[in-house]
Image 1 (cartoon, rainbow, N blue to C red):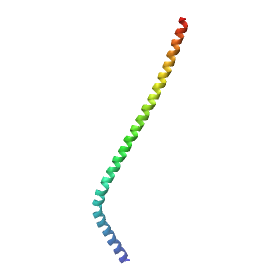
Image 2 (image 1 turned 180 degrees about the horizontal axis):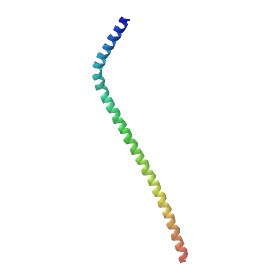
Image 3 (image 1 turned 135 degrees about the vertical axis):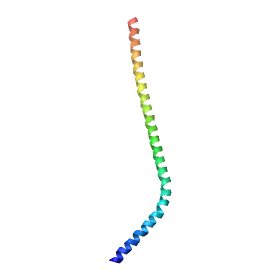
Image 4 (image 1 turned 90 degrees about the horizontal axis):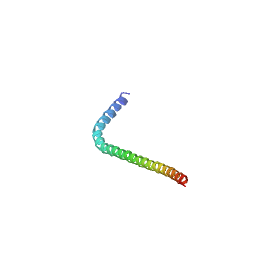
Length: 87
């Protein structure tokens, strides 16, 4: 029983030393990876925003064209009515 707890204490101490030695290595290794991941995420968000803006502009163009066609049709009808009344 005493030997089992002594082994656990040695293993725990060894893990603590290993963690303190590996932590700076992991920190220098994972920091650039995390920064690249964040930059990639930001680029993805910006690309999504530009696609949404492009789609919005396309929809606005379609609406403006439809409004123009409706106005043109209405003006053509009014002009034809004026022509009919003048004859």
